Image 1 (tube, rainbow, N blue to C red):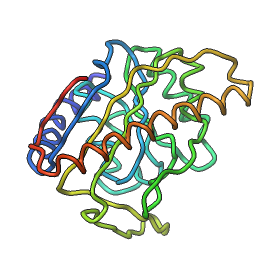
Image 2 (image 1 turned 120 degrees about the vertical axis):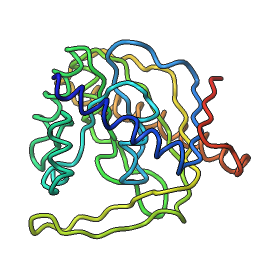
Image 3 (image 1 turned 135 degrees about the vertical axis):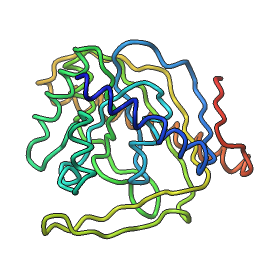
Length: 232
């Protein structure tokens, strides 16, 4: 764990400096983010989101990331050594169990409940159940986050990783709005599929509402200065 913390403290200023320099980052909170282990759950309009959300959090967090990206030379090794959690095809339960272990050890976890990038034309995918299982198994609060950016500034990329084609959408500069909601606490039986689905839907509904707030704020304040953080 020491090496993971070391890599975090080395990479944190690089990512934070980039976010504060290249993005017009506007963060607003309905409530201050609580101390202790928590699940940060956000929508996923760009491939860059995991790093920008982590920069916003300003605490070390371990991100559930598509397993294929761990196979990218150098970058994949960085993800592995940083302790981020691969979500491999057919091994979602293993990723959830690893994330629960992190939460029970007092760490933060970032998850994108849609399970893939949001639709390119805008909008959201339905939530998968991973975020619900994380919340019910760990007892940790879920902090919903709604992201909005300018789709016109997204740079689509196509790459081949070990023979598999991967499509990404990098957001390199421009307005990037986040709205952070109040903590959501859930209880229930993780074997109860109806309960699990209800929790997943509730979390995604909150994320969508917060993303709409981010969108409205961006439309009202197109010239917002970078680095703005406000609490309601």
